[in-house]
Image (cartoon, rainbow, N blue to C red; front, side, top):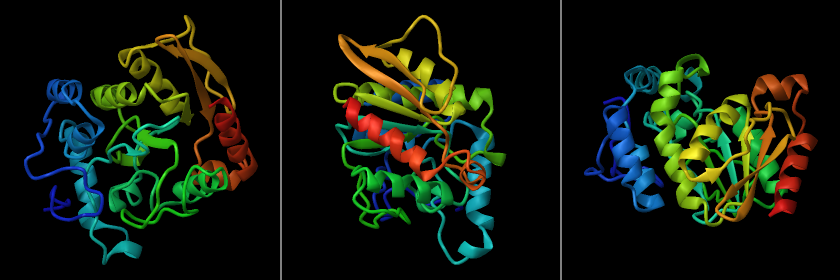
Length: 263
């Protein structure tokens, strides 16, 4: 078996052996819409098998592994949303990294993107530790929650449009369940920005008539009922962006400082 079976003792595993599994887009929709709580939703997210290409890839990576992690057990399953249950700030990324979240079982954990992101969150007071190395390491988000547009590690870090659409109900339902507390939604990268618009609409948010182009620091107002919510753009903390200086630590700090100010 090239993944961690649910309910076998992995730290913070949200699922149990009897958690229902989605095998196609229709079942994703049914199980996401039918989740009555974040606990139920994250459990179902973490065992999804609806996209054959992604299932094959994430489990192949978990078997072959990277040399540096050859002695480790890989999670090899979808990565559920993680963080505060009543967050004011939401962070939405693209998808788990093959040897990051797909290995550790937690989004943005165990890779260079996460090193940058969690250090910035810690400086902002949104994370209790400056590093996020593995599930069960004591890391905790404060008033914030992370999720991804696509919950499985994709080949070449590029989900297909069909895979993004299939995964959307998980994102939409999570956005709906945290909507009573959320004040800011930060899209980490252009892929997350594009994926958020239809997901927010499905979750019951009222969107502006035209979609602004993604950019770092771009802000646009949306609403949930009568309450204003701000959608913000932020360059993804990928090595490509951080090594080239397209995204600096100060730029990340400024985004989170602004998000905190809005809340």
